[in-house]
Image (spheres, chains in turn orange, cyan):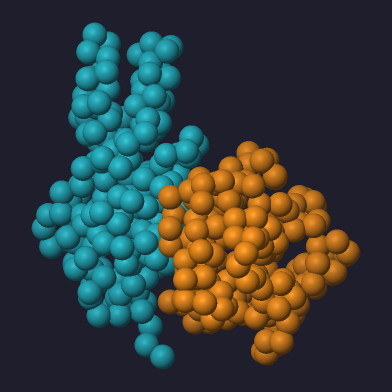
Length: 198
Length: 198
Ligand SMILES: [Mg+2]
Ligand SMILES: [Mg+2]
């Protein structure tokens, strides 16, 4: 029995441009309000940084991503879906998408499914795992932008590859690799390297 | 570091009475059509057995569970939620709910979340994993009614405990234990027994 590499890939800010879309929609809806340019975003959760601007900005920000259609219409992070398709065709590699739902889950669940169906194809629905606790998912690699991922299982089965985002530029990598973009072949080198190690 | 037992529990026909509710709603909607009494159900997928009655019965059956509100209004399998609450309070036990979405996912995703919130409480949302491939979820035990559970990982990390349903009465257990009901203390004995084995 041949050992296969299992790769988990996060959605928000790895495949879907949550931050970019948030900012466009926020500025459309609140043109008079202060905003945080992408390059100044320094917390993982947008709400935490907007809360520091003015007390009610947190709720105004939250209204943006809790709205119907927000997830469904997220643009792709450049090259992500193409890379995923190619990764899934690599020999002895299984790719799964692993995403955490919003607390306000009314729209995001079905819209995440629909997004995957629209951008990757209906077969990928069976490769989609929704969970708040990613340590409970089995894999060798998790490509994710979140600086600290914790859950009931410590250590998890996977090693995180930190997908670069403004708010994780300066974090302590603690031995983790980074992936800055899907638009060159770095992701392929990382996967090939993990294949040698399992 | 103390080893904790991780228990995964399926929803449909383990916590939620899918079969019973289906039959009630089916007979309400199609009072003139043939139906399959619960005790004669002999396939895991309802549609497979209804397809044998008449060609269009499969679609008629499917319309029932694909309807808005079907999942949300599923009654509990007797004692299931109470047992889950108690199980989660056992020492060194982590309980997660692990459920597969319908192919037609428009309503079932948010309704499964809402069902868990309504019947177990909002904290359980962070203990809910949605995946078509349950072999990708880490655990020691999976309590599930499905006779054969397969996925990319073989063998999975968990051992299945087969929750009894009409269509799995005669299946080859292949070393698996059965759980017939939540209404006595058998589930507790099974969990205590697994705790000794990890
Ligand atoms: Mg993310
Ligand atoms: Mg089931």
